[in-house]
Length: 110
Image 1 (cartoon, rainbow, N blue to C red):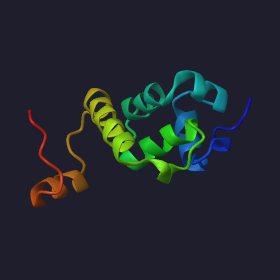
Image 2: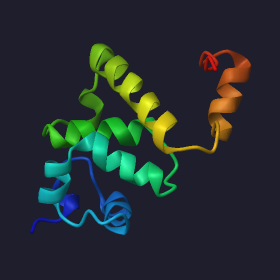
Image 3: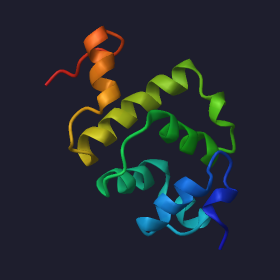
């Protein structure tokens, strides 16, 4: 079994988070896929973080985290928001609330 931290962009902190939800190897993470694995983190109470989410996607593709560009990022944002809505039910994070208030992020339509 290969360590999760052997995957590009993923370090010890995310490795520990995945291990806490039962994903203990790079092989398991790859078989599960980025979305299902990230959903497990959210369901377990991990705070959503878009950059971490797309860094995971990029890493599983063997790409650096900062290789995520406009079209990729827009599609991943839609998927991230849907995952967050389904698996993380504590409302907006503090930073999202502030960004919404100043108009940087459009408010969610309820």
